[in-house]
Image (cartoon, rainbow, N blue to C red):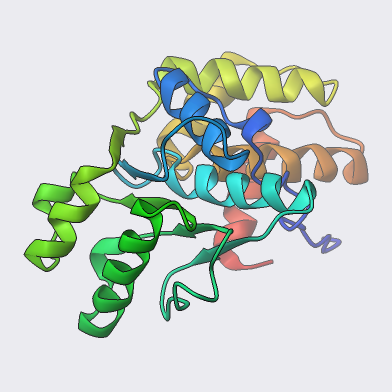
Length: 225
């Protein structure tokens, strides 16, 4: 059998306009406003389970600021000094994983955001009060705007995947959508990346995007082909 590599790097990069909001319209609007420096918020914390879209929103906000010529950074640890981040949007993911020294730096950044010197977009798996952080850090994070990011329902994911396929000029049978939701990764960007790979594979092999083809794509992905 001819081995055709499946390139997942061509998946769409995170952007605010390709985030499927579902029940997160307020979250999307707030992140968009923070990215352009609109409104009074200078620290926003997003929390929700894996696959809910937190990282997508952080990376999308950073990309939007940079595209407009502004300064923005997506970070875990180490974190920059407040002085080095002055005037920037700093997006810090998975803040519950920060070690003691990084938490000291985060507290300094939170102070700077409160003074209006920079903007912070934080993300965590749980609400700030439930995070394994220093009490003063938890309290300071909770003083900002805290928003829950709610995962899409399976039906919303089906609708988003069907729309994504339609935009690429092919249709997805319901059985393919159901199979992806059971056997694929649960987050929407990963599911869309599978569709993109399936579309390219169908063009290379001159086969329709069917359940059999999607099964083959997923199997080859697991094997690392």
